[in-house]
Length: 403
Image (cartoon, rainbow, N blue to C red; front, side):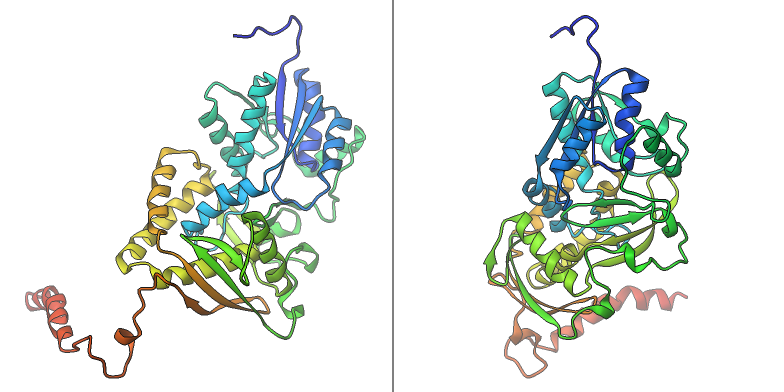
C-alpha cells in the first residue's frame, strides 16, 4: 500500500459541471478542508464548451480538471438498457437525470483511484435525489471511500447565498435572481427546477424551454420518420444507421422542431417530499413511443404483461439510484431476454407536440392478419370461444349462486 508524502494534502475528486453549485464548491472545499481538488466533468451531451468549463475549474482553484467524452457510453450502456426496459417513473418521467448519475459517479471513483484521492464530492443538495444516486454508486464501487457533501455541511442556505459567495470570491456564475433555475442537460433530456417553477400552479415561462419549440409554433405540416430496431435497441433513423449517441442526437433535433417531449410534473422524491420539475425529452419520447409499438407486434401477451408489471419497480430502482444493485442487474437480465425478438421498423408522425405511431412491421411479428380479420377465415373457429368463456365464467357463476 502506497504511503502519502509527509504533509501532502488530501485529494478530493469533485463531480464538476461549471454551474453555480460546483463552482462555489471548489473554493469552499479548499478553504474548509485545506485539500487539493480535482475536478471531473463528464461530457454527456450538455451542448456546452467543455474546454471553457475545464479552464474555469482550474481558474477557480482546482489542481487538475478532467473532461471525458462519455456520450456513446452513456447512451449505449445506460440509456438504451433503460429504454429496453420501458422505464417510466410515476408513468411520466423518462429518468433523464437519474440515469446519468451512475455513470458520472463510477468515473469519479476511477479517477479517485488513479489520483490516489481519499474522498469524492458532489454538488447535490440535501433535499434532492442526486445525493442518493451519487453516493449509492460511490459506495457500490468503493465501499471505503469518503464522501463530502457540502450542501449538508455549509451554512449557505440557498442559491441567493451561493450567488453572493461567488461574487465575493470573483467566481462567474450562469444564473441570476430573475432566472435561478437548477438545470441538468445531457443527450437524453434537459430538466428545470427552482425559481418560479416552485409554484406548481404557475405555467413555465416560454423562456424556460431549450430543446422543444412551443407546439403552437411548430411547423404546420407533420413530419414522418422511421426507426429501425434490433433486439430492442434503435439502430437507424429513416433508414440511416447511426451510433447510439448520434441517433439520439438526431431524434432530439427532429422531435424538438415539432414541439415533442415537454413534460411538467410534480414527482415524489426519494427523500420524501414532492417536487415540481419541467423536462424536455424530445428524442427519448420518440424512442419510447416507437419501442412500445415495436413490442406490440413482437412480444407474447403474457411476457408483455409480466414485463409491464415490473416496469414500476425497475423505474424506482433507476430513480432512487440503485443502478449498480444486484436487484437491478437481475431484473435487467429479464428485461433484455424479453427483447430478443423486438426487431423491425416503426413509422411515426410528429405534429405540434404529438408523437403518433402510424405503422409498424417486423420479421418477428406475431400479428397474423388471417387470424385478426373480421372477415371469414379458415384458421379460427369462432365456436371454440364458447368453451373459453364458460370456463372463465365458472367462478363468477358459482360466486353469484352462493350470494
